[in-house]
Structures are given as structure tokens and as C-alpha cells.
Length: 541
Ligand SMILES: [Zn+2]
Image (cartoon, rainbow, N blue to C red; front, top):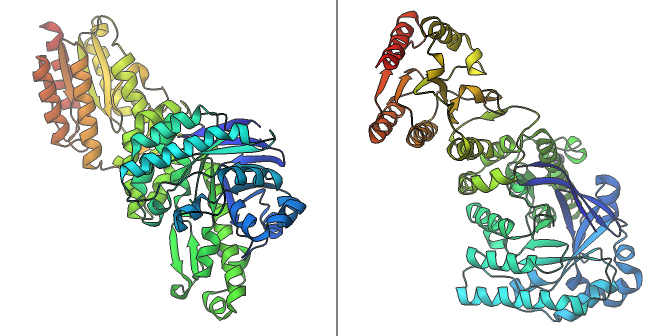
């Protein structure tokens, strides 16, 4: 059982996980099959959807079909030859308080039915209970996890070690650390049901990020119950490799029609915004007139189509390095998702450590949300911790960004550079030319072509939060370097007063003399003349 990673973006991984019934690719959606109610048969999943894996509940099967499933094996019993993952009844503990089986029994039963991926009977952390109770669920789950080694008798089944702790992040961290020391092949984040039902996605970000930071990176992470396609981008970006969906069937039962950006009641639709085989042949009226059982099956199929399609979009975005852009698009589908995206800013340095350094294409900045991107965090860290200005450069010259990149090849900066070279030929090494640009901050000219400092596009006019971020980065740069003089050329069209105020404050704090050339037309001849004169004066003093 190995997990091989082929592509990454943010914390997402396209990888291959090997099981005894075949290799599955992450990120992976496992449709949940309830053996007592099946709107879509497992065989149909395999034939119509080319679905390679599903999830079912070993506890429900044990209670309703104990011996038949053992005799036929779970693959024969469900008539599905792909990879089968079984849950253990933990969800039933959460709903009914207890289950009529023991942890040992459920381990043995999962081996007997020959499942491919099995889950220990963990004790889920309920929502809104005391911290003491949460601690008990973490401890009891860990104690059951430790006993697995003695209880299991075969080594060809992958076991899932669930992480508990709910919204208590210190307990999630401990649960993940201790679970990660045990020989599990997969981990799972348990009991986020209430969090998801109530759309508390910002809390979910904390829970997933905390679990990720404390679990071994080489094992896949499963998120229980994340079945709606509108949140796939978020959970995949946070590093969930597997997730299961019972939602496709549950929603269908309530005439709820899933889309990649939310849910609509079938009765409220005038058009079907999808072209899957079911939607292509129907309209909302004809669907509403279809007998109930048939309609539910049709809706369940549509819901599955929309889920698998969204997952493919996400995978393609990972390959192209555009998962952040896709995530931003989805985050604007619901305010709770946007809150979650904002919360990701808290983890931008962790995202930076895990994300690839270069990508196949440039990146897009739509708003201040993009400031949390790993690429922005990387530039900030590089400049503050690892960068030293060229030796002998005593005057810092800050030029405004241009539309054309690399900045020094734009006609505006070329004009300035020509003037500078012409008038300051022998002292050119004493000046350090940098550009201040959104959303990165100060970009030394010699780094202009480092990815993605030239390979990005940003929407203008800049929003206030982005401007504040850049102003802060300029101030940080000034405070951590030791120039003797600083000259800033302002572009009043792009940069409002905030950048200037922050620049002045930083220079005064550092006690470094500075000059500002202000203007609506920073690149016209007169302003540039004054600008180069200011540089000459700075060098002469
Ligand atoms: Zn459809």
C-alpha cells in the first residue's frame, strides 16, 4: 500500500494510492452506498460513471446482512469490483449515542467481509459538548487505535485512523500527532458534520489545517461527509485527499438539485443548468412530473455527475497550477465559503511551505484575497529573511509598477533607466533600483524575472486591503535594510495616499533621508527630469 504523489498545488495532491482491489487516484470522491436504500446501484456507478471506488457502512451491513456479506464478500454482496472503503458506525454513535457492536467486533467483521479500506470504531466528537467530553472522545479513539495492531489478523487492508477533537484545535493537534505515530495507512478528520451542515467553513479550515500540520504528509487524509461539490475546491486545497458523499442521494430524496456553486430546489428551477445525460433529456417540469422513485434516481445521477465533473475541474486546476483561482471562483458562490477563504490567510506560510515554487502558467490576482497566496507569502519571506541588497548600493530608488512585465522592460521604466544611465553614469552602482508593485511589495530589479514576479496579472484599481498590504511591505523593507537615502517616484493614478504615508513613517522611524516625486504622470519628461535630479542630489550629498 503506497501513496505516490504526481502533482501538487496549494495542499492538494494528485496521487495514486494502491489497495488490494486496485489503484485509486486522489483527490477521490467515494459515493456512499447505503445497502438498504440504493437510488443508484454500485454496478451503475462503475459502468455509467467509471467510478473506481465507493464507501459503505460496515456497521449497517453487519446489523442487517451479517452472514450474507461475509459469505459473498463485500464486493460480491454489493456487486462492485472496484475499491471499497467501509466506515465503522461512528456516525451512528454520533446520531444515536451508541451502537450495538464492539470495537473488536467491527475490526474482525471488516476483515471477514474483505473490505479494502477499513475504519476503526472511533468515538466522534459531538458539537457543542464540554471540552472535557471532547478530550474523552480523543483519548478513547486513540486507545482503540492502539489496540488495532493486536486485533487485526491481515495486512492487505488499509486502515483509517480518525482524528477527533472538533473545534478544540489543541485537541485536534494532539489527536493528529498521536494518531500519526501509529501504523495507519490513511487518516481521516472525524465528525465535521455539524460544521458542514451549518456552513461553518471557516471553522472547518482551522480543523483541517490543524490536522494536516500534525499528521504525516505521506498518508492520505479523508474528510468524512464532505459531499457537496461546491466545497470540494476548498477541502482539496486544504489537503483532503479522499472524501465521501452520501449527499448526492440524500439531496435527491428532498428534490434538491446540486450545482458546483450551491443547491437549488427542483421546483424553483425554470432551466436545468447542466448538460449531463439526465439533464440533457429533461426539463424541470418533466422531472417534477416523473414518479417519485424514478425522479430520485435521476436526481441522484445528476448530483453525481455534477460532483465528478467538479472534481475533474479541480484536478485539471491542480495540474495547471490554477487551484487558487478556481477556489476564489467557488468562494464567491456562498458567503461562508468566502469566510473560509479569508481564514486561509492565517495559514499562508504553511501553504507556502507545501506549495510548488514554480508553475506552468502565470497567476491572477482578483482582489485582496490573493494576498494569502503562497506565492505572495514566499516573496515576503524571501525578502525579509534571505535577501540582501547589492553591496555598495547606498541610494534606494523606488519606481512604481507598470502594466508591462518584467517591469524594467516596460517602456515607462526604460525611459527612466535611460535617463538615469545617461546622467549618472559613473555612480550607477551606488543606486539600487526596485519596483513597488501589488501585491508583492518591493521587488528588487535583479529579481524581476523570478517566478511569478513577472508572470502575474492584477485587477486595477487596487482595493484598499491590497494597498494596505503593499504599504506595509514597503515599510518592512525600509526598516530591515540600511540605505543612506531613499527616493520614491509616485504614481498617483495607482497609489493613493496610504503607500506614501506608510513610506514616510518608515523612513522617519529608520531616520533615513528621503525624497518623494509626486505626480499624476510619473513617466513624463518633466517629472523624470526632477526625479533624476533628486537622485543626483542624493548621490552628491
Ligand atoms: Zn445534470
